Image (cartoon, rainbow, N blue to C red; front, side):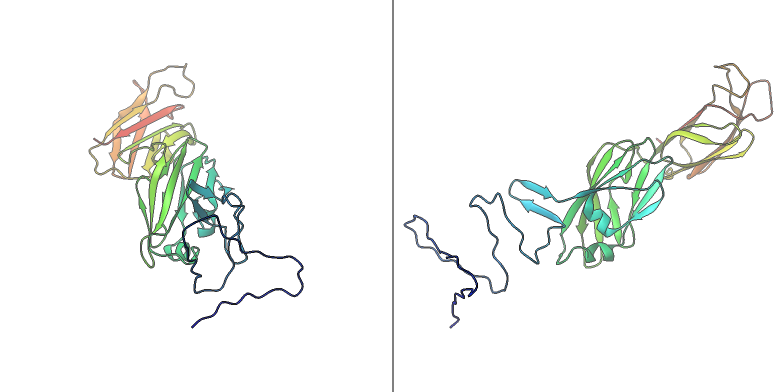
Length: 283
């Protein structure tokens, strides 16, 4: 038969009292078969304290919702890996100057960061994109991104779920709509070099030569039967609104990119464009 022992502290002078409530019903309190400390409260649970050894660095769930003990991390304007520790921190901000790719940590590292986790353990993180360039979330080894991984000029929240002993699924659960994978658009200045003003689903724009450009998509088109439109309203040295466009409709289409040349009516030579807009739609 196990025993119950009350051990007073010889150095203290206070009196601890076990008090029963005003009740006509008999109750049994069963102690857990483990060592540790009991949580204390004021009686309504509003000021629970964390005893030594109980971590509060992760997400705490209450009866009224998520109590997020989180911090905000500002991501650098580079392609980088988001570590497991950073993901648990909760909220990221980034101000990209071009399209960026952020890759998650590996599934093994993510799971290792969830002490005592089991299949189904989960938490959320949010990315706030403060500019009009795509930020694409891709999965590290063992990590599957479920849903649209692109966030642009807005925010999106993902739920990280341990799906197996060494696998993690990351679900997009909320956020502003991103560009669909079957379209792309970009506006850029192509005179002498390329300066991208805004874009969606565009990884890069390259000036191959005078009036000769290649637009590479972040997410490839399903085939080369997509619609494409190029508008070049101005050329160097011309008055505003001078009509010009794709020179003799010369282009090379691929699922991952499109190459085209610009010029203007009456001149067979290629000419750089100052304000070039490209729209790709795959139906």
